[in-house]
Amino acid sequence: MGNVSSRVFMNGNSQAVRIPAEFRLDTDRVQISRNADGDLVIHPLRPERGQALLQALAGFDEEFVAALEENRQDALPMQDREAL
Image (cartoon, rainbow, N blue to C red):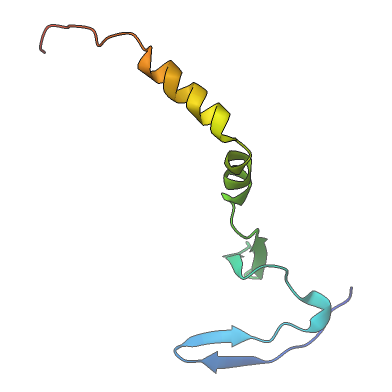
C-alpha cells in the first residue's frame, strides 16, 4: 500500500479524516497518538476486548455452576481476628 491523499473536514465540533477503502478499519474504536516527527498514528482497537472472557464464561454449564455453589457452601468459616 502506498501513500494516498485524503480529505480533512469538520464533523460537528470534531475534525475528521476520510479513510479511503484500501485503508478501511475493521473496528469502530481507534487509539490516536503523535510520534516524535509529529505524524499522527492510528492504531485500531479490537472490538469488545472483554468479549473473549464473556464467551469463555458462557461455556460453563449449569452442572459446573452448581458444583461451584456447593464448594462455596463447604468453605471454611470466617476467622476471628483481633481488631486493628
